Image 1 (tube, rainbow, N blue to C red):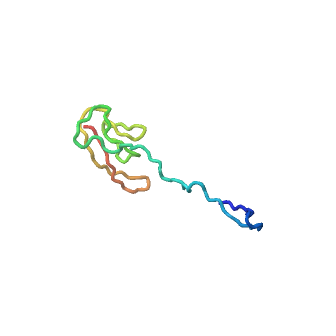
Image 2 (spheres, rainbow, N blue to C red; image 1 turned 30 degrees about the vertical axis):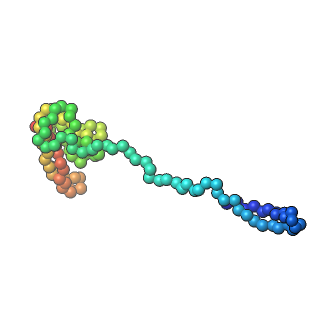
Image 3 (cartoon, rainbow, N blue to C red; image 1 turned 180 degrees about the vertical axis):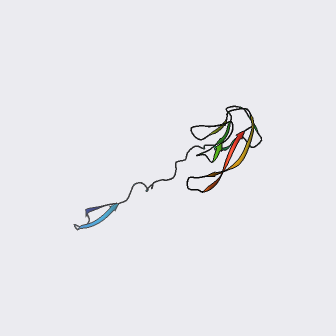
Length: 113
């Protein structure tokens, strides 16, 4: 809003009246929008279940990091995707893995047998 000083001159009576008036905004305040960006889905997860038949090159698991580790006849892509290196059946199992701190972890492993 802006304030203007103006003089009002009345033609009827020769009296000069001074007053302040304001000019209002011509448009409403729009505000700002946040959280409107969204990314495309990545379609992560297990693609071939336990006991499914795999051919070489077929994707078994799409993942971020190695939540599931590769076993026999399974390769790892640059984005940690697990894929079959040979034809066979998918088999999931768990393996006890000791970290460098001595903590024992149970990790999932996928094999193609």
